[in-house]
Amino acid sequence: MQPFEIDDTHATAIANIEAKITDAIDDYNAAVMAGNNELAQMIHLSIQGLQRRKRFWMTPPSKP
Image 1 (cartoon, rainbow, N blue to C red):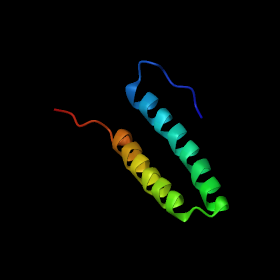
Image 2 (cartoon, rainbow, N blue to C red):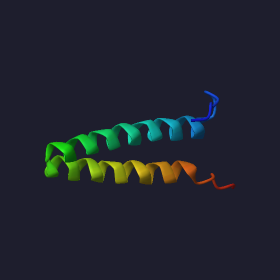
Image 3 (cartoon, one colour):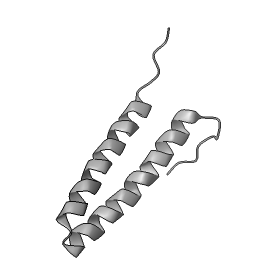
């Protein structure tokens, strides 16, 4: 992960979301290994939501 400026809200938001995605993937893998398919599915949906949020923040802001 590249360093980012605290004042850069886009980079900060993206870095935070990426960290959450990484944690969620670890949780997903643990749920799959434990055979807890219901939990794995819920985590998978959460990961999809985080990925949508990341794409939102990666979209350049529109200029007026």
